[in-house]
Image (cartoon, rainbow, N blue to C red; front, top):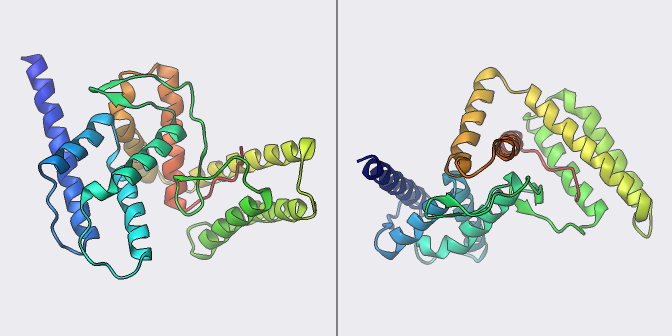
Amino acid sequence: MAAESVDAERRAAIAGFCREIETYLCRKNDGHLIRVTGPSFDLVAGWAAQGVPIKVAFKGIDRYFERYYAKGPRRRPVKIDFCEADVLDVFDEWRRAVGVSILQDGLQTVADDEPQGDARDVGDSLQTVPRAASLPAHLERVLMRLTSARASGVLGEVFDPLIDRVSGELDRARAEPRGMRGAARRALIDRLTALDSELIAQAHGLLDDAARTALAAEADDELRPFRAGMPAEAFARARDAAFNRLVRERFQLPIVTLG
């Protein structure tokens, strides 16, 4: 009976996941209903079985629609099947960012040792940037994102000194006509890592108790499918990474570090 109860709960959770995807797809299609049934249901149910968090799936759908809108006037409603590659890409970025592996039949295959931190926030908290990206270009994007968040009122004046320091690092990077190399580049990357830690710490300070509790609950919810297959230390690291990702998203923060 216990096994039957677990199976029933799992089926109910997958059905609920599919309903949420269907509702979101309807909104993205301006109210035009595209049913998630048959093969489409099996596809979305597969995402749920792999542990794809619902908001990660939404980001994948958004990514497809952004490209779709960029092509010009829409001609037909989008089916969920068209979004599969983007959903799985965003899920892969999320997994690397928080340090978890894919699920098979509800079980985690291999637990990653720690978050890899290669999901860079440019216009999105899960935007992949090559590790060999130009330092000035990276810093320009970081500064633009911080300045925009500051101008919109999301960030307070407490962030101004940190933004000035990022601007100073950009000036130093630009001053090297051949680009920073060797020890100078490593030293800059170390400073950016420290700045990123300060950025997150300051953002944590802006959270009230209610917001902190809500984000912690959301991080736990994202990681729930993976919890049983992870050692306690690995789960704690993943939870911290998931929480910090949500904090970045809340305050529209970039990732300052460059690997």
